[in-house]
Length: 239
Image (cartoon, rainbow, N blue to C red; front, side, top):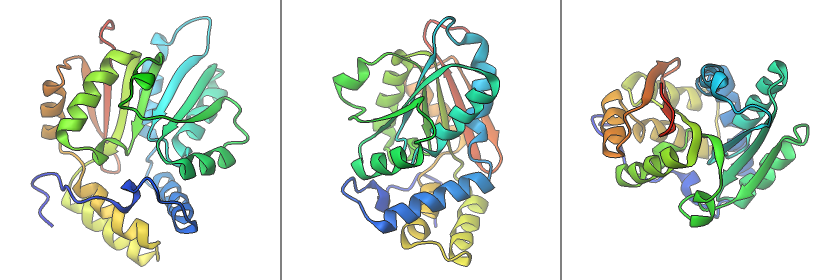
């Protein structure tokens, strides 16, 4: 596998009509992998740093884009409960099967709601949110699409955009490729997990994409295991 540039082959999960027990198993597997490899820390650590900027007198309005099985939102909700932070959390996804799955898994969290919305639509862009999060979501888009999205999100978020995505690196690629095979993962996870790494980002990719989107106020940090944490501050905010 040539990892010099981002791969463009589609993932199986990019099929928005996908709805099966196999997809349900894949979502369970992804939550397990993220738990083992600290995949929620980039978002939670960013929220800790952003907390002084949270609005006073009302719940924090946070939307998770491409929310999938809702696992990131459940971790955010648990974090907010521990710290006494009032939140109104929304999961945004285009796949109704995933939204149904996420709602069933999130019944203990009334602060979380889910919506089927096209993130490119005027309807979504008009929605006010304090924080937009995107976990393992950005690598599903081409560079051109992502530049457009970053520009939009930067204008929409009133506090910050928090991105948690993979580092395209040979060790990350081959580790997840053979780990999912060794553990007997589903066909979906064995196909998509290494491809996700191949479609992901280097530091230089992020610097270039953010510059193309006209974004200058951001933090870019590498996190274990092979994750990038990108915090983009709202246009009216100062770092």
